[in-house]
Amino acid sequence: MDSNVKSKEQLDKELAGLRKTLTHMITVEIDNLKAENLIKSQEEFNKTILSSLNAQIAVLNTYGEIIAVNKSWESFARKNQSYPSINYSLGSNLPELYQDHPSNKMLQQIGEGVEGVISGYLKDWDVEHLYETSMGKSWYQIKLTPMGRKYGGAVLSRVDISELKESEQRYAHLTYHDSLTGLSNRLGFQDQFHQALEHIDPGDIVALMFIDLDRFKFINDTLGHTIGDKVLKEIAERLNQCQLGNKILSRWGGDEFTIVFPGVKDVQEVTEVAENILNSLSKVYQIEGYEFFLS
Image: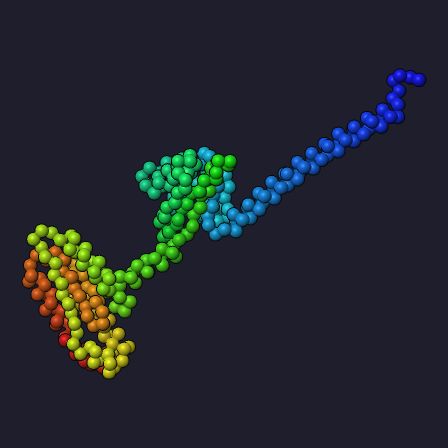
């Protein structure tokens, strides 16, 4: 028997080994494909989540370069009119772009925030920024969050907070102003009165005038609160027309008004204003067909 001829047992053994090797290779390849598909699925999943968010989001690498954005950010980058020389698209390096605007303190501040978070010097960072474009003014909250040691870099988000700012301003206005007349209310009066006292110059005085209307309660009770409210608004308008200048006019409550005279150098100034007010308020009132006088 030829010694080069392999026996059936040897052939079966070699074939079994070959099948095992092929099976392992196929298994490894399938696992690799599964891993690639999993990565692709995860990337698509992440992109879907990012794109579903209204916030403008950009992912930065450890150099501050934009490596991923969502649809809201893409729209912002296309429409950016605040600083047209800044390119917010993929691959742009934000710290370098902001450094090109040394005269703009806000951009410098944002650039320092990006560098601080990416370097690990800052845990996180955020700021509220007013953007002015040809379309108007908008408030944005800009926030930077680190990606962690494993990935490095950071996530930058821009959220439009214009409506929140407007609500805050309205609330602040209502806190210190009378909703009927638009004048400062009692709280606003107290705040401005204390400020007047703090900023008074040596030798000057702060004068305070109280105005209490006669016969208003009678008119309010007999003609109704609607007429009474219109009377109060008319009074506020007349007081505003008395050339008060830097005087602080407030509605104390009901039919009572106050005027603060900050930094008065001559008492005669207060007397002249008081006379003007008396003359103005004593003139006839004509409201919805009614005529009457107040003093």
